[in-house]
Image (cartoon, rainbow, N blue to C red; front, side):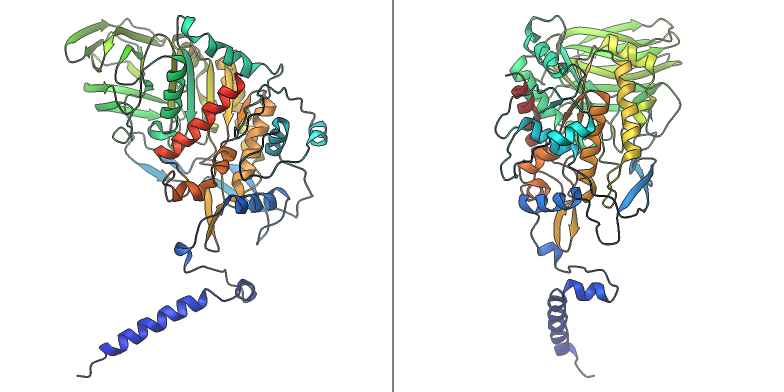
Length: 514
């Protein structure tokens, strides 16, 4: 038999040479024959620089049409991933329907640029913005400057009617040690903060500066209990329901509710992963008991507490004040019993509660029950609510989010009614990259979403902080991935990336207090 093995090496060499050669075919020549250019060696190419990010967003903001024409969102339905009712899996669904749009008219600067100009802050590696006075006059927007310009700090814009929302919150922080309750911050978001990413470092910074301890709100069950490092969390035999995939039922800003069986339990343990979390002074279980149930709590594996519930349609709490390192709950006579979560906290200082819901676009939070949420707020008074959404809505080719803007404005107004007088901060999406001819560049829809979210903040008269600018000041998503600050999906941050953003947000609040 003839031996063809020697030809294999020649064939392999030929394939390599052809692969490299294809990479040098001019892009215009590829498009001329109706093909889409592909960089076969894309994984060997570098990511984007800050300058490249600026060039891309500059083209997007100027209204230039990408290849294939501009697209506009026709409707926004469900998020990209939806947690199952049992909390064990996710399923992919369609998020955005797109359709071609005619050539757009020339537009002015985005709202994001307006904010940067108002505070005249120059970021490292980011060109200084132009004057926006005329644009403000055309938009009829009056902005009160509450943050003094600080080099390298992404400021918080205050769009409240009197321009004092941010200042009033900072005054509460300054009085924290003299208050009889904690200053409470509720962080509502999606998988960007899942597992206490970002919020854990923000909490640590706040508690180190203003006092307090404990991880705050923790759900009864969690898909990321093994991943989350800020609390030990074990549970079993609970049925979970989420506002994302269940439109009926009473939900509050935690977005989940849980029903037990006779064998259900949940156990929490303090963590040494961050400061101030290894023990806590107070534990509060929030629940509704329409029947007569018995709640058993065991503290530190020794002391046992029993609560015989009284039938009620209202939200109740079981509060235990002890030096707590671990606590375990179980419920007997479970008919009519619904749990909403547990607060592990100190009675004073600062509490930062993480309400992350995987796949949540934010729009579903308009379905939170006003009565239940009012009761929730009475038991746990909030001083600031941060809304971090948009990751599950933004799309590569969609640059018009007018439908989403209308929906989210309704959500913000609904939350304002549920928590009257509470400061609200809209936190924009961060950077998200997509591959373009071998290089990772910012997804065009990101900048449009940031602008949309700032317009929501303006319309509703609340606070706004630009996460995208904070990431871009640190080099953008390409740098985040390169440094291990973000996952290689160029979308989700890592623990170290969360710390970078948390520090930037904390610095923004500190600058506001000067």
